[in-house]
Amino acid sequence: GAGVSQSPSNKVTEKGKDVELRCDPISGHTALYWYRQSLGQGLEFLIYFQGNSAPDKSGLPSDRFSAERTGGSVSTLTIQRTQQEDSAVYLCASSFQLQGHLTGELFFGEGSRLTVL
Amino acid sequence: ILNVEQSPQSLHVQEGDSTNFTCSFPSSNFYALHWYRWETAKSPEALFVMTLNGDEKKKGRISATLNTKEGYSYLYIKGSQPEDSATYLCASPSGNTPLVFGKGTRLSVIA
Image (tube, rainbow over all chains, first blue to last red; front, side, top):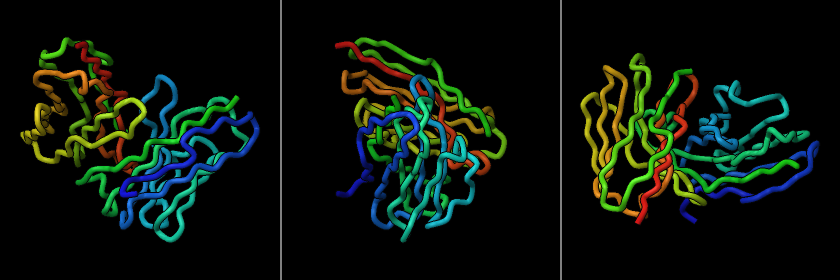
């Protein structure tokens, strides 16, 4: 497809389990972003990649969260030992240029809805 | 990280009404102001990216203005239609954070 693809679209897991969320950006887009929206909250920045490197990881909520991007394409967000407060919609976006957010639009996926029981 | 504020939080209008929302942001170290529309069960979609003070952009019945000196942007919808029902988000880059988003304005257009 031509857009940003995320999987799974829905994930229900038990507290303490690990989950992996995948993002496949638009082909050729160099920058990739992860955000999440918890119930009743705005979009919260998690991490972004310029190519395969993440300039700043301070947005990740805790050390249970990690993200990687390989080959300048697919990215995986991993949450270890999930907690109920991790329940949210996790959105991925990409942009054509490095730091494309300064001058151009982000293209979002439809999100992965995570529910931790 | 700068605060991006949006008002109102929610809005109900009748079909055919015109409406507008506000986004405010700190005016120092300004780079860009983004507007997105997020319909339920879909992905957020960019409406405008604005960078210049005084800029005005238009897409169909939707338009936006930007005042970087006083730190605000308005989004206008003329002749609202039910398909305009969505959450409208604004965002601006800040330091190491690519885009800081406001909490959005949820618009419901009643037929």
